[in-house]
Length: 374
Length: 113
Image 1: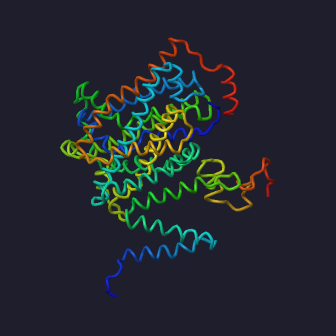
Image 2: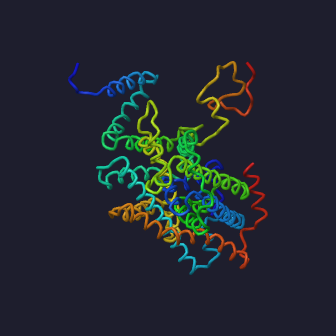
Image 3: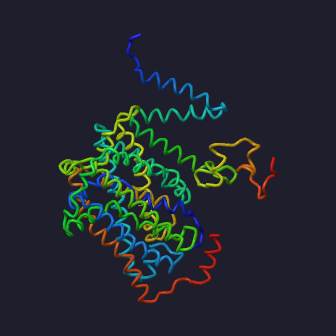
């Protein structure tokens, strides 16, 4: 591993935000509300705290192995035999999440915009667009992520209109759900927040000391958490209890009710623009999966592997499943993937400390890194 | 008058495109826009707004990949540089500029006035 820096700090910030915010955003409010009722913001906050703890573990790992991606860290810490299984698990996790993102996107488009178009047709257009971004090296990806950042900022901007006319009494029954409900709300929100593990794969390529990276990632994480809480609260403000139970994508329905003088259906335009954000999420997951596959097969042919990964994520999408089956599958996948992503960094850190695995000669590296960042 | 061939909004769109084509000063640049219009039109006809957005994304992705003489094509925006962003969107008159712009950047400050 060379010490080349491919991403800047701003790019790291938006990498994290794009990895987190994707297709899960729209169904987030509804899926949390079914379990945690009006206390959903609390379960979002607790989930954010959990993620912060994991990010701290990743920071300590990065401090210990400054030049290693998550895959090579796993190989160094767990030994040759066990690491293979963990690597395969991690890659399967990335591919499964990517295919869920793809399925969520196609369903969203099929329901909201292109009702009569068969799904494979616009799936092809979407994948072609993704491939143009996926074939670019990481530096260019970082530039795209910064360039598309204003799209993320659209959500709180558009949504905050609800704070003006919303009914604040809808927020009120606080403490309605018990602790079990709040915990279920956390697991329901997992699909929206499980992108944080991708950060461990690009960590060595970012400029700056580990501490600076940690600060950037933490600020990115909390801005994502604030955006999620804004989305949840605005949906609550707009819709009453009876409506919240019925609406699968409360945020989109809320935008649909805004009608400006120039733009009639804000939701359709928003969703079209929003597809770029889904592209970035999908590309980040596929990139991480492809890097892992390259590691396992021991090749450096990124393009071939990336196309194989895209095909792997596409195959499950050709089956016809309904939205209910999709949500059910999501719940099935959520829990093991959550255990995986939350416990893996912690376990890696503990094993590193217990086995006292040495990183590369630490002091000189840090001096070099601090010089480089200045 | 009432043939019903095109809608009102179509006339507005055509008028806006015709007027805004005069904004581009260079004929070569306007040729590029004219050529790029066709894939966008195709995407718009088949997929609607989402096709336009995705096709624009492909074009932007291509622009990001471009480099001329080692400098990225979308230089102050795509590798975002806040300091250099100053004179790209709104450029102040020459007598206000104390330092050089991006294209003429030297290490030294240029003379005042």
